[in-house]
Length: 457
Image (spheres, rainbow, N blue to C red):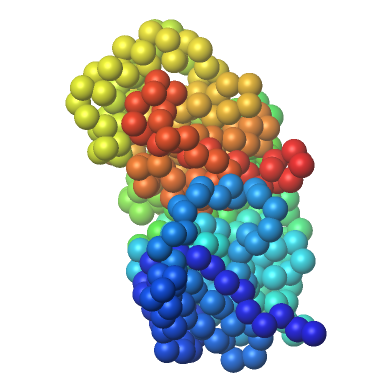
């Protein structure tokens, strides 16, 4: 015997049929209609293998389905290559569909992402491991990058990057004159060095830069590391370095448990300053006449630092409340002004003191993000609207899940931005309440990381 088809009830019959035909290459039969029963259906075929039956009937109930129930949890479609998984995922994102799982390589070698169809059904887009595919030995994976140790066969591309004088002059070293020189530097400085990595493009595996986090020679605290990086000029201005820096900051703070990460750059290197400031680094001043370069120039250093997540004091509560209000007005458009004013004193006088608070400050020392934890739940996580996109929310969330082992969070169903953020971070919906904790008509979704969910079974 073999599996013939899988059936799904839906209230969006035509929309769902068009989705599977347009985006996933399905072929639909003519609609079957049974007027007596109020039943309609399509069969969608995908070449060999089971078909998908989409069904609609007037008496079907809209019963909430728990994500962690027994039974069918997702549909899986095979793609011919990693590049096709990436292409399809980005197409779905541009069309407005929710990406519930960003592209990644699973523990058994499958390259996969997860997309939600119009009804919220999970579609796994998978590329099986290829026998001739090179192994990446990847240390970090971001949306567009693989960050891995350097290898001997990087020498040619390494030389192609480092012979550019615009690169060396911004970093303080002489442009490479030959591939032999590049091989020697690669062996002596990069290969086998702890916490120094190559930055490569995920789709092509091309080497485009380097990033590292090493002991700061100017500071004696062993819990301080210094960030360094360079990027090949054709890839400037595309956000790659900001993406790589965020991954390494998360590693430094969450895995190495550093108290401070520092960075230096020349005053004329405006691009590097922008990368550091976008990632929340604070400029602590100028170290005058700090360096004699290879060509005889004496340059100052702009000195930056980034503190780890810290605990606030009660005197910070008014500033934290302002972050809450600014963020709520920016994202919670479903709240009325009356309800905002109702919750505001409750947050200030009761909620903040009832949770374990953590904050992040920006370059001016201003609180720009905060999180509140209970024994088993992320009770609140807010980022100032003008500071979003700098990795603050991700840092707080990973602090909660990795350092505090808290893997559950509640979110307002109408807060699309927050819901999308948690889904991208790997959370799944496990339940729903029609009202919030105060009985207001704002449905609450309960989310949990799958690892914690499996551990509780």
